[in-house]
Image 1 (tube, helix red, strand yellow):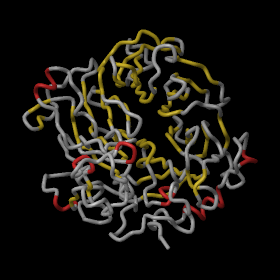
Image 2 (spheres, helix red, strand yellow; image 1 turned 135 degrees about the horizontal axis):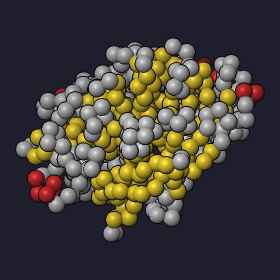
Image 3 (cartoon, rainbow, N blue to C red; image 1 turned 120 degrees about the vertical axis):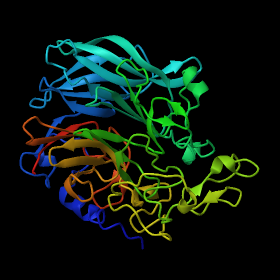
Length: 449
């Protein structure tokens, strides 16, 4: 029988206390284990992705599949549309960042977005800027276009840094994994001088980018392999969360089967993926490079289980990777020893959904708060609060949902949680379920320090 890491082992039991039933909730009565003051702010959102507390008192969020920016009054749940991109693109609308002077009448009421679009024959991502007026966004201006896009591990988090630069995360696009297991993983591939000259950003998957507000490359960006580009740090799988704590940048990254990472991002840092997951400790991870399979990859049967790839697939231990790299600050208790059984369990009995019982908790977002950091879990429907040093954490609120992002009210008393519209998570009894309590909703929970 498989044992969960200690930090996550209480999930099933806590679900019994905080479970929310099956239908969309309309109030505390649907959440018998919820704390006093809990409420559902709004429901019916279309795959919400990024959520911010705006200076106008509204919650600003992107709705991925509806391709719109929505403002929600956190008191009443009233929604207004700030921007609708449905007629402009069929790509996903993801990241959102507000200029630090947004709402201060300084002429910088700018909102930055990332969304997918068709670039000739391929799908791509772009970062754009809009100007806000009277709760509406208008006047699109391209910041950086032609960025890699895919249907997995997109990340696409945006932040306006305290240094006046824009930061953007790009996942590894799911390369070397599941449906894309035959695609080479580019997280360790750095752009060449010729690529930068031609504005070819195809080497950007698995990176954190840093750019001037007009999209140009800052003069003080790191020089990597002799080339200065937008790349600020690299070697990442899926940095779903990113935020600043003061002047320091951090990310929350999804691990493969183990080793979700909380990372302190340093200029020019290499974070090891796909050669290393978590710490370089040879524990429960082997890099299997399916794209280099002898005789080709297409006819091989894929398995995500480390060390169980067919003999045609070259493999390497984590300690075989000799390049300098940055260790994570924490892996949230998701690191396990070699020999761990990633198959079916008494809780996850179906091989197709057994991934819900893997040690990972699948970080959905990262937000810095005065007393540390908040990390959401997609699989566990949980908000974790990390200490300021990132090395210890507590569980704040759980329900049968997929928690995509969070925002803290200006007075620090209310935590707003936005949930995915669909997908699988741990059910009330710990088993995988796609029957979520509050799909596409914003929940309000008292925030206790």
